[in-house]
Each structure stands twice: as C-alpha cells, then as structure tokens.
Length: 329
Image 1 (cartoon, rainbow, N blue to C red):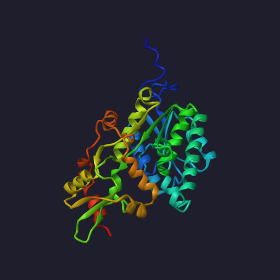
Image 2 (image 1 turned 60 degrees about the vertical axis):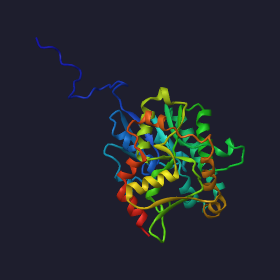
Image 3 (image 1 turned 90 degrees about the vertical axis):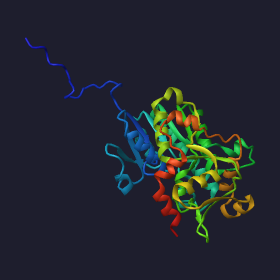
Image 4 (image 1 turned 120 degrees about the vertical axis):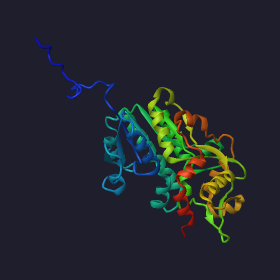
C-alpha cells in the first residue's frame, strides 16, 4: 500500500513552522532616511529577516520605494503610544534618532531643547522595546562627550545619544551601541561638499589640523548593522565605533581630487574662526576628534563587513554625484 502522505512538503507550507525556519522580524526606525534606509536594504537582502520599516508617512515616495517584501508601519518617536505596535512581536530593532530634524524643524536652532527631546525620544524607544521583549536592540549611538570630558566639551548632538545608549543597558535591554563616523555621504550634500573657490579649486574647511578622522559610508554601515544582528552573542553589550577609514582630512581631499579630477584642498580652520561660523556644537565635535578617547575601529568594522570599501573605492562609486554637488551653485 502507498505510504501515508507527509503532513507537509516543500509545496505545502509547514502549518507549525519551527523557530529555525521563522524569519526574525527586525523593526527599523528612520527607514526612509540615510542610516535606517541602508539598514533596511541590507536586512531585506537576507532571507533570514523580515523587515518592519517604520516611518511617519507610509504614503511618501520614499516609503513606497522601500524594497519589495518589507512591511511598512506608521509610528513616530515623538509619539510614545505609537511605538507599541512598531515593536510588537519583533525579534530585534534598529533605532536612530534625528537630532538635526528636531533642531531645525522643531526647535528653531535651540540645542538645549533639542538635546532634551532627542533623549526623551530615545528613552521612549528603549522603554517600548523593553516592554515588547525585544531580544536585540541596536542603537545608533555616539559618545556622551560632555560626561567623558567632565563638562569641558559639550557636544549636544553626540551627548544625548550617549545617554540613551547607556540607558538601554541600565534597564537591561540587550543592546549593541553602534557609533557612526563622519559620513562620506556628507560630501554629496550642499552643506558638506567641498566649496568652490574663485580660481576653480575646491576647499574643505575644518578645524582638524592633521588629526585622523573616522569616515563611514552609510551604505556600508547598513551591512555592518546587519552583521551585528547576525551574531547577537558576540555583539550584545558592545559599543562599536565604525569607520571605512580613519585618515587626516588632507588625505580625504587628496582622494576626492584623485577620484573626481578636481583640485580639492584641505584648509585647516582656526578654531575661533570656525566656531564663529559653525557654532559650538559642530566645533566641539571637531575638537573631540582630536581626543584619543574618540575611537573608530576600521578592523572591527571590516570584521563585521568584509566588503568594507576604501575611501578611494567610495569616491569612484560616487564620482558623478560628487562632481554634480561640487559644481552646483
């Protein structure tokens, strides 16, 4: 007599999937932004994960452009009640707060109010993740420079993220704090691009002397974060400073020159001149980069993502965008 039919086979889904075959749901905040978007793309390409992309506007063009198969949900870090559903049933979460949007979009340039709001949003995310039983919380953190320097060097857009990362650990949430570097992608923006001079050359004007500065490709960082989720046993409890390279800004200028064919120079800005133009927060960040306690670890980053690109490789891949940004008025 024929053998009894199996309860399920490859053509009929297993009615009671095991934990081994269930996809891990990862909730990603900032899914339509730079950091979160790269994390979404990296996770969505790995069939072990089901991405839940969080945005305040699921009907936006950016939300509609997210990869196929990604679940898009509406939530807002400024609305703690909306966070419960965003985390419900998820295995892990990537959370990034947006200091600059708060600073310029909500608080009119007031760093004190922005700092308080960013901390409140981050802590609300931690509390909601803890309540939901999130098993791996990856936070886009930075150092609490004010605390590290005993109050000498407040860097509000760093400090709040450091407070939230520490809070996540204190409440017992299984956390990896990933500290990004200066974005290479800043060179593609109106604010961060090398500035055109009257003689046709371009300048990068920062108070960094010849101090090496960590730089990160946001896209590469997405792969790093995915790798952090891949190995929770190793990565929970770590603060990881990530970078493609750690190099003096003069070397970055040289790489931009090589890759674009433009004459790009680094000009070391006097601190007082730069502070008058850029303000305390950004200037103090640059001074923090002088400090040996500001660590961005290229080898640790490459161990997480062996495909990590050199600055020259990144410039080559972004040549057209860089030239367009630099030449734009």
